[in-house]
Length: 284
Ligand code: A2P
Image (cartoon, rainbow, N blue to C red; front, top):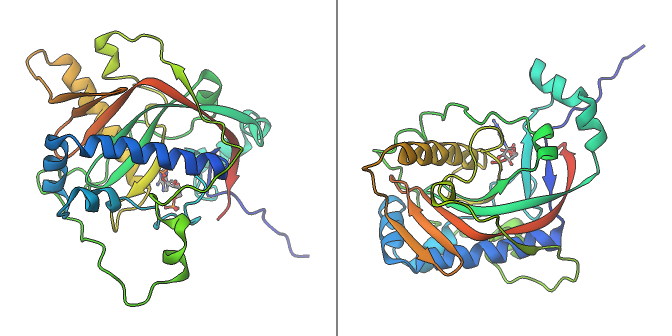
């Protein structure tokens, strides 16, 4: 008698609906554009990425490397890699995880991170979401990312001879025209007024890696966004404890942009965005 093993998920996460994914892409695009309008930001980032114009920088981050095609945005809660180790299997069998499946959770967008490799949305997790959080917030960044003194120049998107269906599909470009949808759930809520010290490290400790990958530079995998965020959180802590170090900071309408060095920037929103999501698993 053959025994069959159940297929285990690749990862668990909070998934947006398609309308909200489009909407968030639009919002993210506006913020990236606002950052690019800051001359120092554009100069700094274009020094680290092989782009020749602000328009090209705006087009650099794409979602083509997403395994699922990239039309549904998500925040990974635990990368279980089909139950690769004991802790993944524990997560998969955790009753709290099992009972959260298919349930709705609000996602709180508090800012963005922009680096030569990735463009990500930064999230603040609620207490209930922290119960489901299984990512390592202090994971050591692989060496390819941790050598900031040798910035990796990313090749520009060369025009391909024949575009595949995937490339031609408008959904695979992060910054395409948003179709009209009536089911968006994006709302704006006032952030609790944070002290200036807290403004520049809105998350630390458990859940500080929580993010949505909006797009990656050519050749960069989505997992890199989490490593970039871990790195920025570390730099935020360093900046907070150093009294002398004054970081380049720019006030934008509705947010604050800060340079953490080596082409890594964080954008802090004055008001957080709330978006509905569904907790589920991705099997690939
Ligand atoms: P992220 O959550 O930053 O977007 P892939 O398509 O490469 O298998 O990745 C699927 C999802 O799981 C992506 O969303 C990705 O990053 C996340 N992910 C991939 N590999 C890892 C890993 N080793 N650790 C944590 N998250 C990962």
